[in-house]
Length: 45
Image 1 (cartoon, rainbow, N blue to C red):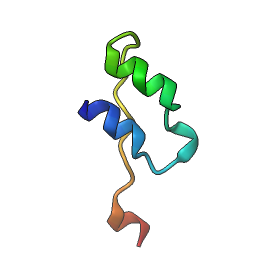
Image 2 (cartoon, one colour; image 1 turned 45 degrees about the vertical axis):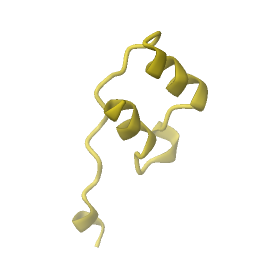
Image 3 (spheres, helix red, strand yellow; image 1 turned 60 degrees about the vertical axis):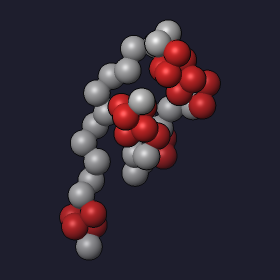
């Protein structure tokens, strides 16, 4: 669930999965790849 959550909070909206894909990930039907590293809050200041 944590990996799916990390995908859902990515800064870049276009990289976030659709809700249908989120459900498939949570049901174990779709593999969950490792999400890209988030941009650090301090690097945006």
